[in-house]
Every structure is written in structure tokens, then in C-alpha cells.
Length: 196
Length: 231
Image (cartoon, rainbow over all chains, first blue to last red; front, side, top):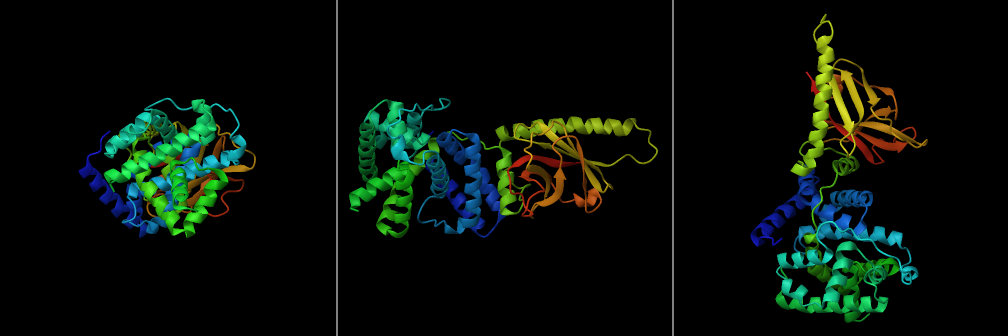
């Protein structure tokens, strides 16, 4: 799953150009942008929402939003795909938020969480993603439990309480895995100089 | 809020574990607090690229059609040149269209040829499963489209199906309502050949009873189909 850095640069440049042209209401550029990124974004949304109708809706809303607000993309500030991913992920998490309106209320619930088991597991994705970004050492530096909790939260959109139910651990334990894992990840990533 | 706390919240916001009211509160604060916003951006750059490792899944074509309908245009032809996997559905639809075309041609040829052969426009409207749900057809010089529901569509009493022409580079234009079962005749503003001249695609959306109140599709796009000219 390692991504060739040269290809990555080339792709980023292309996506930046397409976003810039989309901001000028160029529909062909917008169509090309959709063609190049929609499978990636839809795949990510599907993982989090586990509901194809909801994922389709998020994708639709996100791209309508991109069409109207492509001019708010600032190329120096973030990578184009990161910018698009943010839009889609935030909409997904908003959808989940609507489902569990009050997270405090479900904190005590012992609900079981079913997770799609087709394709790579969240843990495998985390390792593959880290590998591609040359930050493998940082992900591998995490404790197994931290890695697992972070991967499930990030790729499957599990909340603290869902993680606790899924991993059969007390809520406090799971929260501290996440917190410590993120701290460690940050220290390591900032140390190696994250590819930007 | 101290820096450490701000950073921890930003991290959980991007990871996705910050939920509910805490999430909206954080969003609001990050809009005005530059420190918080910076922490947020840094975490996005750290974590979001990892999302690329999720397997790609091609979204169904109707998503793009719905996006086009909502932004009020159709770069449809140039649009999303389908990948191989995506195009399977399309090929299936085209295969069905091919049979339909062959069948119609057969009917045309078997008929006693008193005049020149009939010139027909056919559109097979299919959903994401590529199974045709509606067939629209018109004579080149006819002033109406005949739309037949191949399989009856289940429809709530307060909903209607609306047929749209999706021109290249322009807003979708309503052609009228079609019925969920049986046959409907949709009047065209000009002879079919001219009315559909620059229309590569038709689409059917789900609308409130009586049709879209805005003049553009408001509900989900259920079926789409390429305009086939049998001449």
C-alpha cells in the first residue's frame, strides 16, 4: 500500500489545480475531481457509517459543499485530499452525533457493536496508512491496546462508549488508551517531521 | 483552557471520539480561538492522511447525478468516466438497452414498410442495480414521450416521480410527472428529435406530490438512463 512520493506530489498538484478551477465554477474540473477522489472518500464514509444510503448522502452533501466553497481551500494550509477528507469525515461524525444525541447517556450502555469484517481491519489500515506516510515507526511505537483503540475510533467511527463495549474494557481505561496513544503519536510524528 | 487541554481536545475531535455537545462546542470555539484552530489543523495533518489506507469503494452513479442536479448543471458526458468496476453496471444496462433496441428494430422491420422506417428514441431508466425500472420512448417527430413502468415502483401516496432532461452544461429541465405503474404520456415542447437533441441523459427523481416545487430536483435521483437514438 506504499504510495510513491513522486506520484503523490503529482496527484496533489493535479487535485489542487482541479480545486482551483472548481472554485471558478468549472464543471469539468469538478467532475474530474469527483472521478479522482469519490471512491476514496466514499470508502472512508462507508467504514464510519456502515450504511450505504447514509454514506451516499454524506458524499452528495460534501461535494455540493465543495462546489460552493472550493474557494475556501487554501493550498498552503493543507493537502487537497486532506481538505476533502475533513469535509467528509466531519459530516459522517455529525451523522453519528445525530444518532447518539447524548453521549453521556449511552456511556453506561453495554451495547454491542458490529463491525464490518470484510476487507482489511482497522488495525491493518492504520499500519498500512502509516507505512505509506513513512510514519510506520510512530504507529508501531504505540502499545497494542492504544493502537487498536485508535484504529477503531479513526476508521470505524467508534465513540468512547462503543469502544469500551467492543473491547470489553471499562470506559476510563479506553479513554486513557486513546489519550496516551494520541500523545505518544504526536511526540513521535512531530519528532520525525511529518510529511506535509 | 490551557494549551495541553486544547491540544488533547483537538486530537479527539479529529480522531472522532469527541462527540455530541462537546464536539459542537469545540467547533464553535475553534472558529474564534486561533490557538485552538491551529491545534486542530496540526492534528488534521497528522491523522487525516492515514484515512487514505481505507479501501476505495466506487459510489453508485446516482450520487454524481444527484450532485449535478443540485449544482444545477450537467458536465455529465465529461463526468466521472466510470472505472472498470463502475462500468460493469453501465455495461449491463447497455446490454439490456441493446436487446431492447434489437427488439424494437425487429418490430419496425417486421412491420409492412409502407413509409420509411420509424425513427425512435429510447431511454432505459435504471436504478443502481442496473435493472431497468422505466422505459421511455418517442418517435423522432412525435410530440410526446411514452414512459412505461417495467416493474411497478412502490410509491407513498404523497410522492410523485418526476422525469428530467439533463442537458450538457445546463440545469436539469423537468419533462413532467410519470406514473409509478403502467404507462404515462409526457408531452414534449417540440418534436422529440429536437427536444432531446442535446440531452445525453434522462433522470427520474422522487418528489412531493405534484412535482418539484423549485423547478429543480429536490428528492433523490432514483433512475437514470442514456438517450439512445435508433436511427
